[in-house]
Image 1 (spheres, one colour):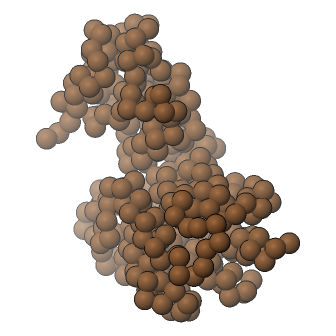
Image 2 (cartoon, rainbow over the protein chains, first blue to last red):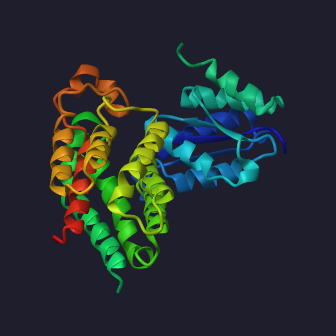
Image 3 (cartoon, one colour):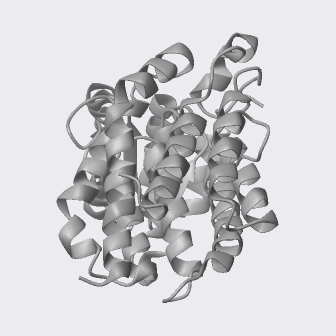
Amino acid sequence: MSSVGIVIVSHSPKVAEGAADMVRQMVGDEVKVAWCGGDPTGGLGTSVEKIMQAIDSAWSAGGVAILVDLGGAETNSEMAIEMLPPERQGRAVVCNAPIVEGAVIAATEAAGGSPLEVVKRTAEELSPQ
Amino acid sequence: MSSEKELRLAMLTAVAQTISRHAEELTQLDQAIGDGDHGINMKRGFDAVMADSAGLVEKPWPEFLKGVGMTLVMKVGGASGPLFGTLFMTLGKELPGNPCAGDVAGALEAAIQAVQARGKSEAGQKTMLDVLVPVAAQLRKDALALTDLVTVAAAAAEATGPMKAIRGRASFLGDRSIGHVDPGARSSALMVAAVVGAVKGES
């Protein structure tokens, strides 16, 4: 599958899973979707290790678009991206967009076969200017 | 046991202990202006570092510091993980294999640049940078005045109290962030005091 994959990273596993459910309702299995949430011991937070696993499981030749909620989710996602193997560098991006709406619209765009930069731009059109 | 290895173990133990002892205070500071997990997150990170300490202290300074940083990145579970992890990893990248006191200021300056990039922040925004920047300046001025270094760090942490938060979750509070010391600044000052204590041979 070469459609861009979607990764959802929330401080709360419930938020992440719920957002992923909404994405699947929209695109079914046409797009790879992975989610993670919670710190390494299960409390609210994010974990670089879990984000790297989610990126891996949603990986496609088209790359992955990552949707995040608050600051630490973004910082940890950027750290996870930098730790990807060299052949994957540049093909995972964090979208500056609301996590739920951004994930659904990014996945919808990805299901149409759009490249990563278009998926990211479409999600980011939702951001307050 | 070589003295360098002993020093690495003493520094690491001192930092982990001070974070552990102050975990509740750090969490309370974070409850006032953030999500209230700074103390517990940092403690989890340094507990994980201490679990690997026997292996870590065997490594030369650059690999030792990179190893500490990588463990913090993986185990802290908040923005503090990548931020403090980047600090330690960059110190490791910048310091030579056998560093002397004069090497530390330059390495810390480079690490500050890396933390600024990671956090998209700069000094004056009520963050850990408000401690690290004056500490680097003091090191540049006199790398051997260790007691002054602790004083500078503690005063700089206190000075984040009147600041308005511009970055991180505390920025959501706007003016209401004023009057609270920044938890990341406080933990940075605690680490500086712990490292200096270890260098001076205090326990």
